[in-house]
Length: 362
Image (tube, rainbow, N blue to C red; front, side, top):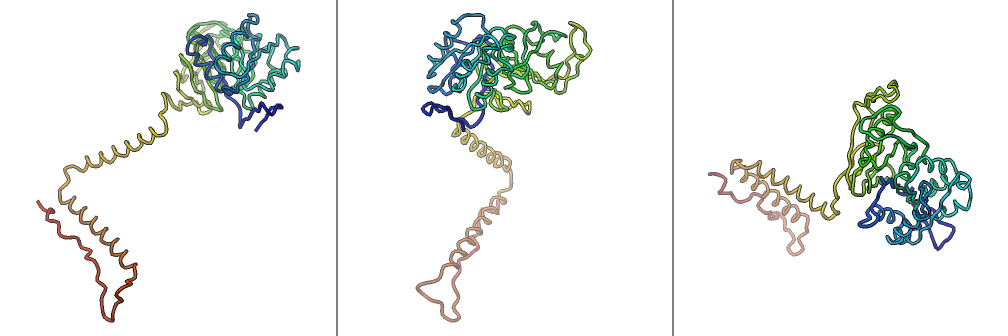
């Protein structure tokens, strides 16, 4: 459990926070589903969010936009911190706000600039430390790609994977064993992500559509938003990536494809779908289980149809004998308080044989 230095603003955590890889162009005007989810993960009305616009080519406006959005969605405070170079990223004045943050949000822009400024600096280490103590860490577009250990710095669009289609740079390593790409379907980035999976089959390729987030908690990924998350699993791939030349097409056979719409959950470690569709509340699950039990009983009853009536008569006779035995046992176990037995007298016992069932023959 971790606390901030200001005891009136406690940050309590039992583990790492959620990671939000947003595919860019998230809705800022209507439902704002993705951004609302981020604010909730950062603490809702207690959220203290730091916006990092380092990748953006825009001026203070980009910080002002996100500050207004997060405040409108209920965050307690929002501040902007913008290291422009590695010297800034090692300056304690830029790092201090991260120590109190319950949420850190990195904007879109130039991915290579973001990587060049943040990774391997005190600022990058502070982001990692904040995540470990429970802060939600996320980003949109470039800010999504840097969450992985290896990030796509730049590359070409296209559906066919080709050699030298993209360039990798170092990321923060918060999402292990994966590469994250963004604006995925909208900018046709299937080929470049698949080419990287062909070159590094041990890495999962995660492509996130616009206005969509891949929300990672531990080893589980959940999809939030309007689009889908596409996952390439190349663990059993057959490829010619090790000898394909220049911009030749790359062979990628045996890749497992997962296209996950909102509400889908995926196990990144097991590389398997966990669930999809809205999950019913507990009371509905109990009703479903009872309904299934009733259906199983009905199925047994239906299967028993056509059995001879003698079968049912025998079942009834046996049930009567079981009841009689229980009555007899209970009677014998109780002492007679009013009339003690005299010598030679016999205790009366209930008749254990049920009356003859006249319905046993037809």
